[in-house]
Image (cartoon, rainbow, N blue to C red; front, side):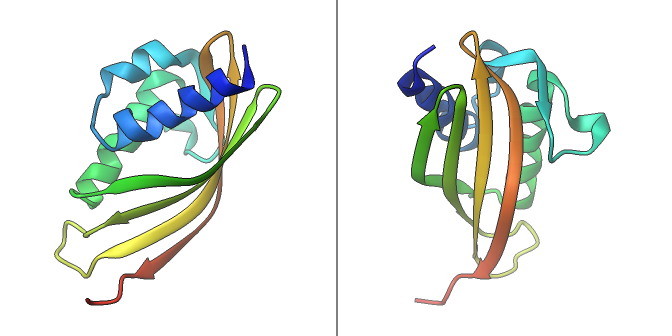
Length: 126
């Protein structure tokens, strides 16, 4: 699979699954053997893992929106630098969370994910 196709696959996860809540897309784009190396063991496998992550994020930040600031691919790996902006469900002030995530793709599916360092910042009032 081409690097560009892998990057498109990862981009879809953020744009459609996380931002739009299109959880069914995970069934088509995530391998049943997928493992999220940053998730607790009981939530780390298969498309259900990505769906659960998207649902947890939406519960914590109902207006969450992830933007990919950089995306780099080589061979079967894709790295993204992202920023998620949202307002906490508990009514706290808006936040911006920045981080880096690595993905591995094979046979047209996402098969692994590694979460990087994430930094949470309060968004300045405008």
